[in-house]
Structures are given as structure tokens and as C-alpha cells.
Image 1 (tube, rainbow over the protein chains, first blue to last red):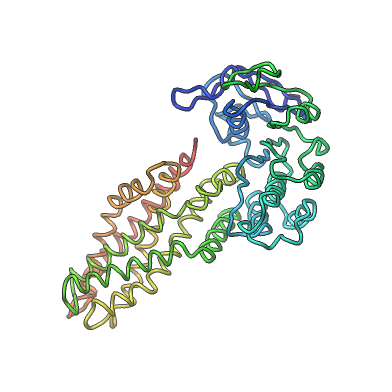
Image 2: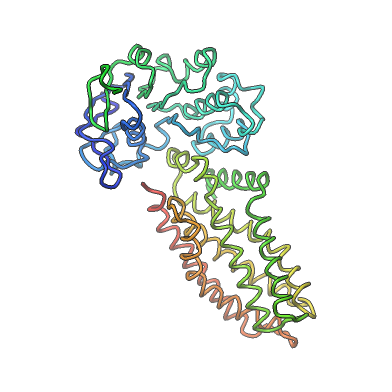
Length: 215
Length: 224
């Protein structure tokens, strides 16, 4: 069964086409790598898939929800790890995760479990503003999977992580998690190695994944 | 109040306790304005219509600061995305934001009203306090409902510092009239709760209308 099915998807910002003619089908449990240079439309695609942006043309089915009409079916089923960690700077990691757990109706025990899983037990009570970018990224990863989402949208998930931390997060957000994933990365080789299918984007349009993609 | 609304309210109060951004700024603003009136009018004491007008216009202008900051953490730290990704209905979000603003206004008034009495009221509030508390409570409900609505409308706009007062203040005119008229007799030298029931009734009606209106339209706000 398809977790994601896009047919000639289009999204504009004013007159500018940020995404156009994007078609792809991702089966449950598969990983789609989205590749392209800066401003290619990768983040826009993730935000459309998360239900945070409306598509303006084509059709989009995500986890059985036709967007934008059935956007209401998505909250609580998608995990999003983007450029912003979606954590409040004045709250600690534990408070942030507990807050998101309450929003998602997740048991508090899951917070402790995830803090341990991302190696943040010792710094769990420090305000997020006092943490390094790498530690914030660990917390953001924990936040993204807190509610055990069926679909994980990852925008440069290894940004700011050292190799040990990246290894630590693998069971949560990596292929080993078994979730359907959409992975945006500038590390082309690695992204292709851990994905089942890929799509290249250039100026919002599909493009072959080759050396020309980044020119 | 739903689980999600309680979580959002708790988070807002925790952030305000730690950042001390809204309540101290609103309080300082009201005290400064009362000091300015004290010297600007060159009078030791006001009463009646003038006192009532000064009290309420200042409190409503202070509320603009609170409303402008109501979605600040969401806007600046990506919290809106976090809320949109979670199964949180917009009514819970409205209730939490309105409750935050209600509590912030109450905290400001705890300091602002005694400061007003000290700086601008000759005989003080005296026996009028219970009536004034009832007016403040009803005014805060209306302010919180309209404020949360306007804050959400302005949250995703670029010129929100301009949009908040432009949208908020006209919507508060009926509330200002009711509050000022209800308070005026209480602040006269021959204080007495004239027509208080009528004005409290009008305030209650304003509250009901704007709470219902906000709940009805909040679903369509914060959308892309």
C-alpha cells in the first residue's frame, strides 16, 4: 500500500513555483531520498507532505489522506525533523518532550525512554538555550518520534551530529526504525545508500540525480 | 479544559515565569502611564469620568503589549508547526491562549490598580473594590477572548506589531464603554454603584459573543 502518492504536485509562493510536476509513489516502510541543491524545493516538499503547506495543484495522498482536503487526518501520524527543532529555548529537554507528549496524548514514561535513547539523561533538565546544536538535534529527533509516527520526514537529520550521536539516533530515525521515511540530505552517497528510491529536484522541478543536479 | 489546552497553558506560564517578557512590560507600561497622567494633568486626584477613562484606556493599551507577545514563542521557536503536527483542536489552543492572557492581565492589575489608586485617586478605592473586581474580571474575559483571536490572526503576518493594535483597539471600544461607564460612579466622590447591573450585563454579553465568535473562527486561523 502506498504511504505517499504524488501526481504532478505543485506548490507556489505567490507567482513563483516552488514545486512543480512532482510525481512519486512511496510504499509503506520504504525510504525516499529527496536530493537537490539549495532552494530546489526539498523543504517545501517535506512541509507539503507534513500538511504544513497546502499543495496548489496536482494530487497528493499521504497516509491515505488526500491533501489539502483531508489534512485533518495527518496530525499525530507524521514525525517532522526539520531545520527548526520545534523546541522552546526556555524549557528544558525534559519539559519540551513532556509538553509534546501531552499534546500527542503519549505516556510520560516514553519521555524518559527517549531521553535515554538519545543519550540526553544527564542534560535533560538544562534549558534548551544552554545546549549545543548537536544536543538540540538529538532532542529534536526524540521529539519527532515521540508519538511513534507512521511517516518520518527528515530534513538533514544528521546536521550538527557527531558520528557517535548519528549512530545513537539510527534506531529512532534511521532505516532500522522500520518507518516510512522521506529523507532530505546533501550527503548524496549516504542518502542513496539508505533509500529505496530517490527523486532529484532542481528549481522545484524533478531532475535526474546526477552531477548536473547541483550545478 | 482539554489535556492539550492545559499543556499549552502550563507551557505558556512556565515560559513567562522564566523570560518575564509580557507581565513585567505590561505592568511597567501601566505604572509609567499613570505617573505621566499624574504629572501631565497636574492634579493630585481624579474622580468620576476622567478617573475611569484614565484607568481603562491605560489597561487596554497595556493589553496590546500582552496580545502582541501571546504567540511570540510559537512564532519565534517554531511552536506553531509543533502544534499543527499534533492532534490538537484549535478550540484547545484558543482556550489556552485566552487563559494565558486572562492570567497575565490579572497579574498586571494586581499592581496596576493599587498604583492607579495611589497616584491618581484622592480618596482611594474605599468600598468600591468588590464592584471594581467584578468589572475587571468580566473585562479580562472579553479582553482575553478578543486578544487571543487577534493574536492568532496576526501571528503569521509580517507587520504584526501594527496589525495587533489596528485590529484589537476598535474591537475593544464596546468593552471600553461598558467598563468606563460601570466604573465611573464608583470613582466619584459620592461613590455609588449606579446602573452597575446594566453595564455588567453588557460586559457579560460582550464576553459571550466574543468567546463564541473566537471559537467559531479559530479553526480557520494559523492555516497556510
